Picture 1 (cartoon, rainbow, N blue to C red):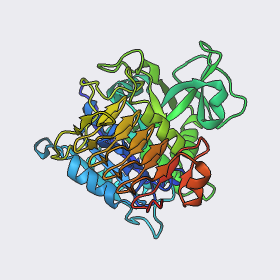
Picture 2 (tube, helix red, strand yellow):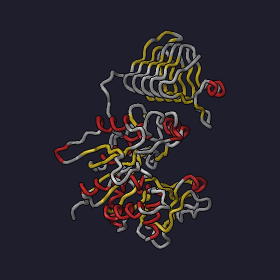
Picture 3 (cartoon, rainbow, N blue to C red):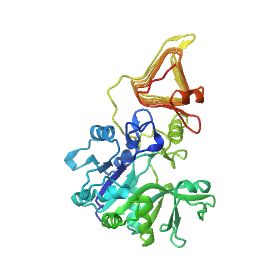
Picture 4 (tube, rainbow, N blue to C red):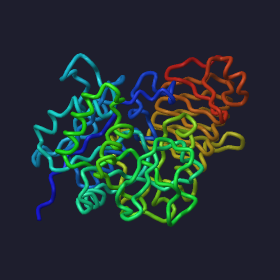
Length: 413
């Protein structure tokens, strides 16, 4: 039997309000993550590593940097008809921009008509994880359903934060109910303290998807959302299957990172996921060379650590340090440094995320902070040492006390 023809759609139009100020000047999927990557690189790497190389990226909100990144970085060989291409909202079927994730696909049905796939893989662009989608497609075909939803096991205490899937009692691969943020969900039969939470990744028969989003577009009571409207439509017709993420056997994974998946939709979640990268045995391992995370690697020199006499030793421990970084007589601990960062003498950076081009002046202290692109920390300045002082200076401070300084934002002494 011939392999099905697969088109992948990446939903990348999210505004990311809870990630402000990091999304003040860019779409959420374009936010840098992990030093040299952007959030969208994780979804695209999973698709490409799985062998799916006909990919459209649906964009809308402040998409310039995202469109540029996809266009410049994700260049496939055209000899075999492969492509990764951004597709902005175009008002193809009316005067509205995308009204939701389902409407984004409805307004882009011309892409399905042009490509004529058998299967459509639909994924979000703002989660951090590794997944072999070819295994999910195989499971979808075997299940014989029109829609398959990827699900990850989560503690039942967190059920009210997710869309929760209840499997059919007689067929655990079929979805009996899809509940949006329930307070009293039914636990899993083999794990009474867990539920199956939707990962926001789906596989559809192409004709079934086109029919569902077309019918949804005509409904005035719909929010035109994939998880909130389209999946429940398939469930109501008994045509939805579930794919348990624990069954995804990924090349190069370990017991420690096999089931890793993070929704980085808030500043605290974004910070915590960055910290997951830097331990001796990281919870999410960027060094899995059998399933690499791919991105553009600019022609930068290696990171440099200079000065080595007492009291002025340039060093970094338990940290990710990107190419083009200079640590000059400074201390960096438990942090992620993106390209072009410079940390000057006698300064300290700890438990922080510094994005491209940040410059930390002499004798400065940066602690438990996220500094966006091109922030300049003056000599002797302190960030993250006093949250009330940080708020008074116009910085964002999260519920857990992380100080966030926006792109190009001035740092007063």
